[in-house]
Image (cartoon, rainbow, N blue to C red; front, side, top):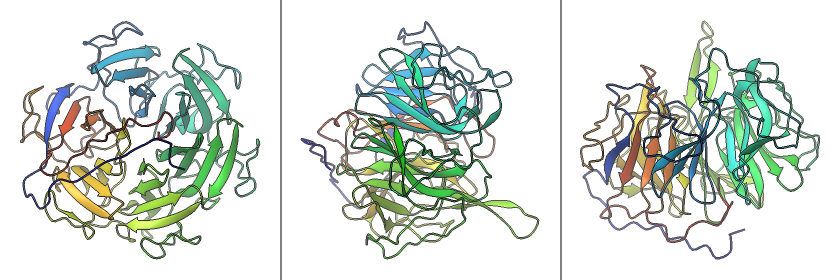
Length: 478
């Protein structure tokens, strides 16, 4: 159902322009040459300050609240347990909650408290590896799964569900076990909600969306093994506190999927299992999935390799059916491109995983995607794309096709056509009220640099006008 009163406009003003579209400006943090991911300033908890700045990490959990602030929590490689808020109007960070410490070697057990009871002492603890996250209609922030430490202090893959209330600054453990690695969960009866249902533990499941105040998630890596992946769809009812298994297989699988006919919805269509993908929700509530990966084995020496995807899928929340919209049906596609600012159905971006679609401060009928890591290209990427589902077209706006690009920082705060962020994946990204793209943190593919830089991308109106005209209804996207 389309939210009442939402008017969306996203239009292209020009085509076939060969120069790079738009310009980047380095806003904050350190550059990759002198990078120090621990270069941070917490300040006073709860007090915004222009000097405040989080440390850099990879795969933060992140949200947009109903006041259009960006929130980040956790992180994969350092061991953060802190919550930060970024004000998209003032561009100032605030340390909101957490111990102000980097404790990867001594991270304590998760502080669960009593299920269903909020408390200032509750905390999901160290979380990373692609947690699912949502913002509901009331403005509460939700977190599910990922990698973390359980109530006994054992590290593993989780399937617990948490809610954070901004006003009270309290976490609540809502459902799921307090112990890691529950690889079975409880699927129950297909599409029937039940208080006993719970998705199996999983990581790299960042493709989430909200529809009619139900929290949806798709796939991810199972707690059983990284080999194979999941392709199930789950829905959680905020009002009833129940999970429902809505679509997909109830087992870990290397299933190749069923693509059907491009652009044709069918009950037999189903994406191949995958993890570390990106997502997007249109103004009608349809959910889109782009890219992702599944790990498998060579028959010789049992060597692990990735199968990255370039395909786009649409999920219909009303019919619970999938449609293969664009991209190749084969993994590790090299794709193709025809230069900047050329919008064509035949264009396909390089296959990738841990790319990021920005959180939207306004609704739009365009998908904006930046970066990712590509097995085919053997490295991280810094290309910027838009996808137009109305016409099923891709458009390449910025960046290179060369993996592990060092980018060009230029001078901090100075906009330039030669500026470009280094290649990265697992970053945080959003689009502000003016239609500009922001990118924060992430990591590169080869040297394992954890960036702590902040970038802003300003589109070129002669190629792309990305100016939504209506701020999105509360809780209708995540």
